[in-house]
Length: 326
Image (cartoon, rainbow, N blue to C red; front, side):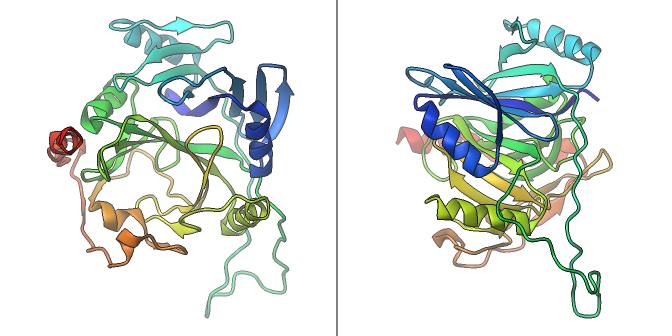
């Protein structure tokens, strides 16, 4: 094992007060602040920092720090990266580098703590799991983990090669033409990182897209959604479930950058998992409360199990980029 999950996210923001208020409504707990930074902590030990800047960097300014299990693992990863790029370690122990995608990221020691969840059993006709028992009543969501981040990239094949060969990420699933879902080698969630073709839907630019925060179940997810709606924040898609990863989702625009997501009931994997290759439309949504226009017609059930990572069928990604040039 080496990378066990997301150690922290650092958002570079101009309006510190507005962004901090949003994060607290979302359910993050502030633990420290000064004139420049506000820091939030999650139960598994991960953190979120809002950092005041006069103007965000050109890439949007959201930095992901990957959590590493041991000093030996961290030293090995840093030495491997330093062969062909600068790696700078700061006073907090975070080692910063630029990925082949051009994104600035960090590595840091991370003692990821187990979190305790006790979702209510689910009843169904003929299968009673909850008898003479009240369900929990929730008022809002309190995320436990940072499940994954998503970046738009110019060439997801080249980006994937960097993350698997240099940082040990494993392929979970491939959405053909759209991108690859990657799991850090010591993390249990279906994916820790999704590298998305930034030219798939329309000509675009690379950068941070969203972060997913894990909550206990659909009840907590919806309690969070309702709380945010009462505060004036609403989702375009509403609540839904992906086919890829099986996860429940609820996305919101985040004033600190990109989107922010409540996620629940994702698939958990280990090295016995066989990756799959999906039609993007079929894999994206199983169901959704606010069905987008492109999902009005049912998607064809196109998915295949891959014999290995080398069995992946990468389309001509240059064709997507040419649309931007024309």
